[in-house]
Amino acid sequence: MFEDDAALALHALGWIVSDEPRAERLLAMTGLDPDGLRASLGDRATLAAILSFLIAHEADLIACAAALDVKPEALAAAAARLEGNQRMDA
Image (cartoon, rainbow, N blue to C red; front, side, top):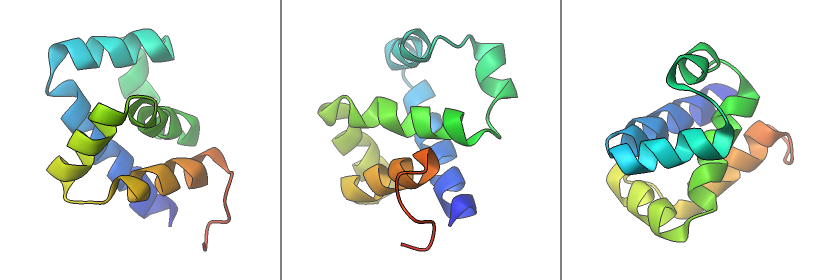
């Protein structure tokens, strides 16, 4: 499931960075700079933070889910698995 969750988080990141103010908000909320974000894209914690960023702002969560053609709940579940809060086979 990790690879699927990671892919979903990366697609979500693509959606986030398509809007400069939203991308700047992500960087401010995570404390990362663009280089740090790129360097940490293989880290579960970073991928979880990307999805948690969306979950924290319902309008973005819904818009991203629609753009990616997934349910908002799928993004939230992926975040939980990446954070280690749910079994990987759940």
